[in-house]
Length: 515
RNA sequence: GCUCUUGUGGACAAAUUGGCUAAGUCACCACACUUUCACUGUGGAGAUUGCGGGUUCGAACCCCGUCGAGAGUACCA
Image 1 (cartoon, rainbow, N blue to C red):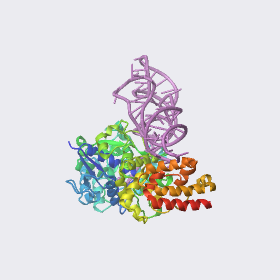
Image 2 (cartoon, rainbow, N blue to C red):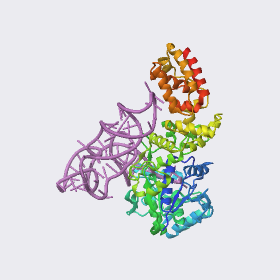
Image 3 (cartoon, rainbow, N blue to C red):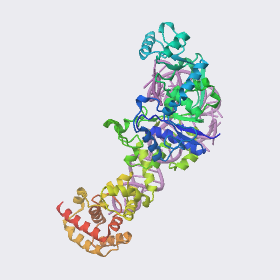
Image 4 (cartoon, rainbow, N blue to C red):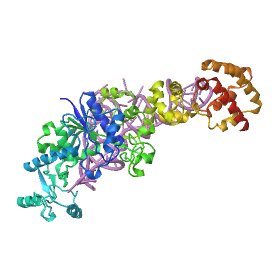
């Protein structure tokens, strides 16, 4: 049987990085087995719908290179539509909910929020273990709940006919053990006495997650449900719903992923943690209605999507080998749900940066130049592709993000803005000024296409003139770049060429005189 | 509170499922290379596998207890 998986986010805002990881694991399983990966949009809560969220999800998956094979935004396959609000319009959920009513496995409930509140208060006052709408409470006379289990059939029909709002709840029997085998966690079980009668169809006619999810997974012939650990407590309900429909034999296999935790390990990573800890928790930047709802993304910070994917893949999973760097193809090849870890994985931003650095190192100078080009244009630099390529080669081992190339290496494209005066004062001695003048003269005759021979020549000159390396080399470095950090001196000189190198040195020496 | 889940160096984690001295990566420290920074390489420090019992010739792994952490507890997903 061909594997069919889905990623089913809710369009309530920017999709956070944990969602991307869930999507990635779905993608990897499908890719490994040549299966189908579906994007389904779960927009059954109209009050939480956020404009642009759906587009964001589509763009984020695309940017990460883990585009679904079918689904909203990715072509309609044979199970369209893939948006639950569209499926709702076709009446699918109501049809199935009614099936359960007919079988006597679900029932109508007319209780208002106020009545539910009153029920909870009563139960709490009694010291009940939980305050759920359940087998223990649904027909209790003193609670007076208005559902079709307690009310006469006629009364129920009358209420429905009069247009009174109602929900449909799953009728869960007492004293049963619901078992399921989770691929990651193994055997998990629940006692139905602890489970509440979940609402299946809301008063507005829309399904809840529980109903919609199962109906759609069934209709779309989903074979594996890979989702976050937060769903584990309701997995028992889900098994019961499959059973109620008579679909247990075709029920998908479950794999509940470990949570992604905050860097301090206290709680799951949330969207506010980005601002709190100073790193992105979203794939893409997001402009919310308010400033506090706007976030930076891995993309806007300068991450390579391949690094993000690689980092995410290793949050809760590893191949069991020493390999750390994986292409998407390699991930798919090695991936298996069984190797996913059970405990929550902490979000380690340093590790994320390390991955990005690795990917920058591994990217060719030409490719880096192409990526640098628009950034360089934006800064008003008129660098050629050839220059950018050479520049990338000199800087790539010194940066973590693409954006750092032009920040740390600005002096390749404009004049030095600031000299490291502390180091200049330490090494720039007036009595050596004459010798530096001579050095400038000597450097007129160097071959600026051959950094190695330049280096030899200058070092020879240093020896011949009774100077120390430490008196000269750092001075040249600061004169050319303004800072002690950066590429090899003669590589920079070769990049600049004779005229620019000499004029920079000359100008810098004059500045040094005044420091 | 109740239900479910989880616990291996600072972080991520491996351990052929009960079998040598508990891998490796990130971070940290030192050295080498660069008379810069970084990269790279070499080395180092850091763990009585949450804790306490038990079973066993032998336990990270099985059993009991205990503590911590997280998630869920909505007509949200």
